[in-house]
Image (cartoon, rainbow, N blue to C red; front, side, top):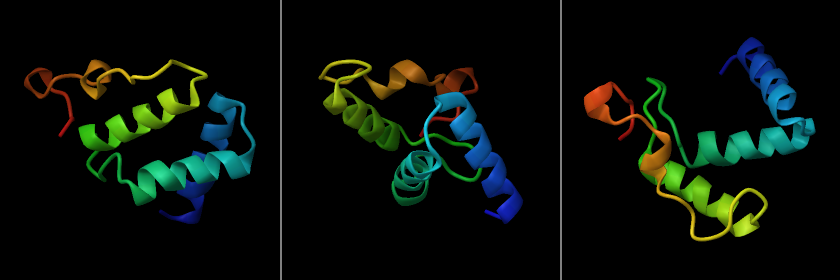
Length: 84
């Protein structure tokens, strides 16, 4: 990712989450760089999304464990979705 793309990503993530830059950077790095929740083609890894949902459920602020199924949040491939 180039510097301009990184600035846009940082700005957008802070704008929509209302969180500080270090938090947004850490979340992005954890899920999109290390765990590869999405590919360069935009395909979503259901395994990666499940890991993210499990982490959110563990925190308990948005929903309680057990986490909902990852498939609940993505469009099925037969309908043009990009989940793998």
